[in-house]
Image (tube, rainbow, N blue to C red; front, top):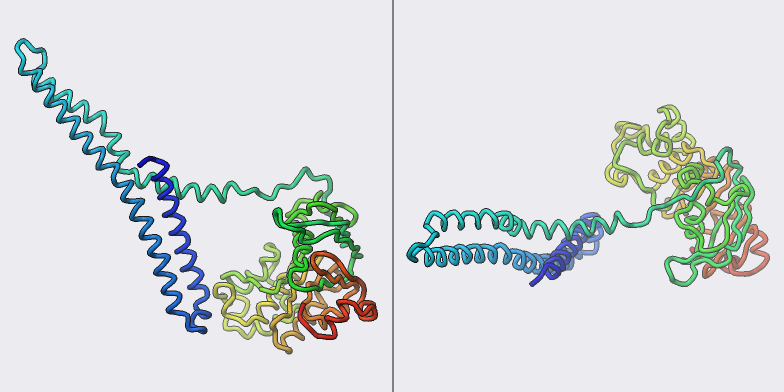
Length: 400
């Protein structure tokens, strides 16, 4: 038994405990799905298995660490017995300088010397648990941060011209996610990205917003490489309306204002009007001061989208990014959302990830991606006349 063995046991204990807590959180968040598919018994079985793993690793970790204080107590008692025996033998000798008082003092000094070691041994399990937990914390802290290189350009008024030049990208050392992607977008144009799942549509958006950096090639904004801009400044010029609208556990007013924290109440309400969200908000019990549940579970998916659009309108972005903002929405709500999106996109460079092709027929430019490459590009009419992949997708009416 050594320190490495003990620390490995506590690392395993922390890992199994983290897995169990993650499983519990996941189950509670998805309890409706669990109930809907009657998977309660299976969830309980999984929990019992994970709980047993925690129990087993904790048992051995505590057993090994608990052995140390007991060993120290044995050694202390043994040392006391040795001192008492040898001291007693010396004290019994004639003309010995060793007295009973000296033996008592020496034994007490020995206890005083070993007391800090005993205290440390008694806290050994706590110390090992803290070290194992700290390693998991430092794994997060040691992750590389987004670092901007020395800036050479400052964002002022953005026109919205975007250029991709032979951009390559891959996640890790895997095969390329996108390869030699090149296209030009003029300010105010609407660009649609279509293609099968995994074709690289979302990757292009992530590169444009600098959540990732290209492996090679260059991305220009108004003729300047976006790597010359600070990420924070660049993203302030972008508005996002995503497929899964995330809302915070806060009031509707605070959720809309998240787009621009210094916005006034009047500006928040005006943004809601432009997004066709004002009428449904006013019908709520507390209007704009209505408190939303976690992730906005108190309102419908379509209403969440309208609030997301309100938030983007409040930002007043130069570049707009839409990730299938009308998916899984009823027809009436979709009409409201489309009307709000048309207002939002007017005069702005817009990138739309489209799954339903009927929503992007008015796009100025359509990029068709397949296996990370642009295989077709042009307007809706041009691509239909080519009779290629886009035409085939359009005929089938399939979701890409």
